[in-house]
Length: 443
Image (cartoon, rainbow, N blue to C red; front, side, top):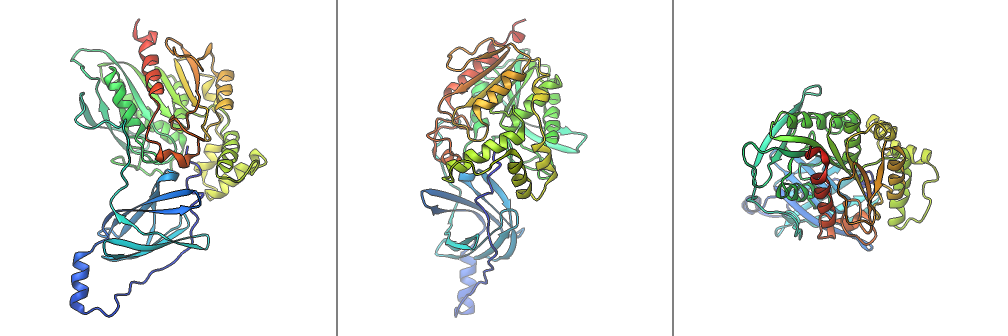
């Protein structure tokens, strides 16, 4: 979960008025024709030992600008355009309380970024940020993929995604399939987070292992319709249920399961409690009361940022903080009131729940304890074990892995974008082995 992704982005307004100086009219025309700020731009700000990498997307035709901060997992933050010309920009974001202004000079947008009364230089260069991601597969893939759409009729939302068929699939084969569900925050079908594409990596591995999958853009993201910001967890669960129904209408699929990460792991529990999935894999899916989880999460993240222990003294204080930060959003209140045990206790299908020991977002020990206490069981704890096969309901703690199941140093989310590994190979191997060993496929 990325519940703190905007906490470091509290900005003040600054308006930039372009000044073309004493250039002749002809020089101005030539300059405007040869320079443009259209497209993607990136730049860095150094805050002590931390680096923040900004990505701006500028659309001069639509007079729109969005931005993100890779290390905070924040993308597509909207802005209000104060001025946007061929070579100048001035924007503010009410959501993130920020301003940025700059002017294109010799191929670089020389600009200033303002936050909490502080002003810092932020120069942008053209293009996106390129990362070393050795696990990311490259097309063409050795299996069939299809662009598909399915609809949440009740909400009037169309979800767009990719259906990945298993490598070597032949007409008449019967294979398992899984639906991927992203965590909190608007994400595309790759589960894009901090410059990583975990769902792309994992769905590719599943297809190579003979398991089909459906990945889709969240409502309001990518090619999917709908308003993301007004939707709560129950709405996203309805979207996912529509995806499961879509898969069940394909005769080739023997059993239909779910792989959910973080909030998506919680949604997996919700769907399983209603017998909508034949099996689920919950990757850091919350199983403890959400307000209690947020209390621990906020203190852990504050400590990792150097704020010390006990910044928040109670669950109530943490609740009030989150509600105030969201402007008393009904979506946030709904989330804080969720008691996952109400869903977990009703699950009868096979469950594989994974947690990383360095996860600051979902407290691993407390979360696993909640699963053991509430899953109907018997629950097998596979922590420290190599064999994860043939367990109906199983939990496993992975030492040294963070919220994205990468090998990490501290678990601080600020590390994630600099880690080349997208997801631990052990986790990928375990998920595949567990799914393929389930007796429901060998009746």
